[in-house]
Image (cartoon, rainbow, N blue to C red; front, side, top):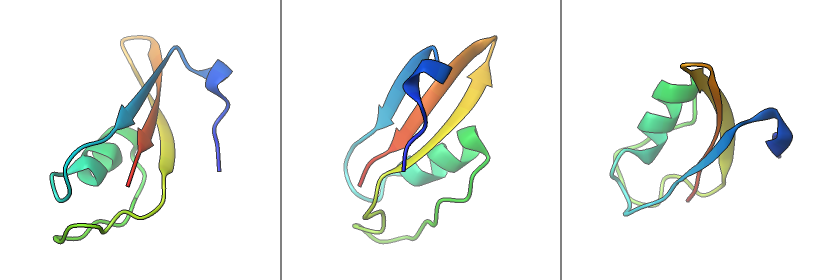
Length: 64
């Protein structure tokens, strides 16, 4: 899994406490469909995606 970093201007990692909406935010920004659930520990693998805002390209990582 991996998106080349040189294709992006910024790299952002979503990390934090369990069950706080990291995967939901990831899906909203990237348009992808990372599986979500209403219990801690749902995300067990890293997901990567990208999006563009105001001409700046962002690589986003959803961490378990």
